[in-house]
Length: 301
Image (cartoon, rainbow, N blue to C red):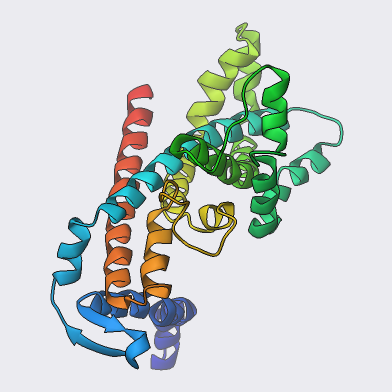
């Protein structure tokens, strides 16, 4: 074997994956490292980008900033309210779509429509539905004798409304992921279960759910990462261009707080510190979520 042939055999795989790492280094790793550098500076773009080194001052200020902790609490609340119902609903929808149905292909494509629709259009429509005076939700509540709710005014009501928007967008997407995994489950298992007299519900919990464990872990981790970065929905839900998340910051998320500090207060150093703190929180929750779901799967197995 010639030197050129050996070089081609050993070097070709690295050349094939090189473009990914080049792009990741340019658009992923470099911004991450540069943001870390900016977070140690007092950086104001309005002053021609003037900056000076302040060390950990931005992080110390962050730890004592009540607005940051309020935003982080709102983020966790909205994430919890949107992620858990979303994944359960996706699992149920995928189970239904896995049966023989008329227009099955159309139904499968239909569940993906909320995800491919513009987030701006979806949020504006839902904001109108959750309107205090003329919203459809309050009209339906009125039919059962419940009083109108000012969805934007209170913390719990605004979190519930924003969580509904997030769940609406991502439930169908997760359902298709579950459906693809369900179709890889051997049909022989269901036939054997039917011969043993297992009901449809028993088949779902004893065969379908255990076979989906890797997929459930994947969707739980991805939903955690996405849910903790939520920004567009609360920004548009407020109906104004002010990124405070309501008059009392009742639905301002951590990403929205970072945007406020960076692009309204022009404190890029402080905004970068928020970005790194949020990255750390996401990493902790994603790892904890992964370990928890894997532990549950192992115990059930």
